Amino acid sequence: MVIVRRGAVQNWSGKDEDPNKGQPVQLSLPAYKWRLVIAYDGTRFSGWQYQQTIPTVQCILEEALTTTTKINRKELCLVGASRTDAGVHAWGQVAHFITPFTYETLEGVHKAVNGLLPSDIRVREISPAVLEFHARFSVTSKIYCYQVYNSAIMDPFLRHYAYHSAYKLDAAVMREAAAHFVGKHDFSAFANTSRNDRVPNPVKTIFRFDVVEKGPLLRLEVEGSGFLYRQVRNMVALLLQVGRQAVPPDIVAWILESRDRKELAKYTLLLPPHGLSLETIKYKEEHLILPTDSPASSFGRHHTISKCKLLLNSESAALSVLVTIA
Image 1 (tube, rainbow, N blue to C red):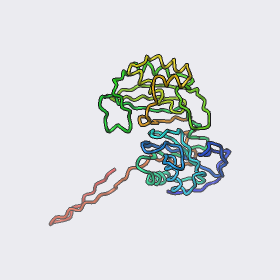
Image 2: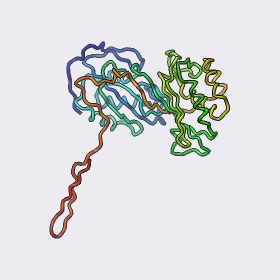
Image 3: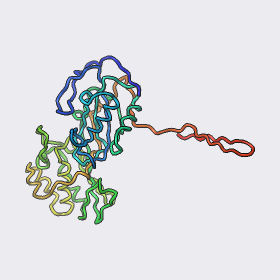
Image 4: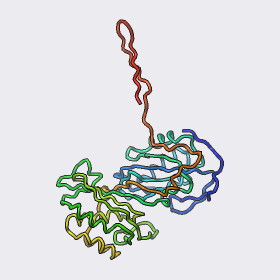
């Protein structure tokens, strides 16, 4: 890991988000921004968001980054794209952090951070980012997936990653109902009350809502401009009631129009978090352009054995065998 110090970055206000309060903070220059793509098994974590008393993904990731960079958490300004709930998993969580120095290569810091993280959290990618990039505010859409195992007997290998439905589900009518979610709507009826003090805009756009069958496993994949607190789990819960044929597909449109969370509660309960995973986050293309004079992105690297010499002794001579492994 080679650190290179350079001159101040031009044309930037020097402000980013305080990871504790979500407020702008003044940063000293020079400053360099780095984008992370993170996967984690959320089973034992109390969600993404930093908390002092219980383990969260952000807390553990910050510890690894502060150890590797020698920068305290306030100066790192680590910000995640999505505040996943306790028990929710991620394959494509995105975050950014800031350093007062740059690197010649990112492979070393990538290896060091993953070496400090527990096995249920992995940084899949580290990339340099333009200072205009923001893990939360540059987002154009997010893709979540909720998995349902639809069989009389649950697959024990999926018990932490899929909800078990012993009721036979009709995927066709679920697709019909899911189509009512697509478009721009007020999703107040599908949002739980957030513990966050901020009042979010309840109007969101759903670009697609697919119900994909893979044998007994149903994958309900939804892409949207953003999601309210527990919105995805509430939408899937209603679709499962439709799939059981307990309610008709057009009930989705009716509950959407009601804008009343109490109406949804008459028909279904919130699903547990373990079936939900944050799959992908999409960004403004101009914010994903790599800055000039930056190191290449790191996606990890395979260990390589260039030469393996086996010595086989015989009465007449020693035979050397060279094996090259890519």
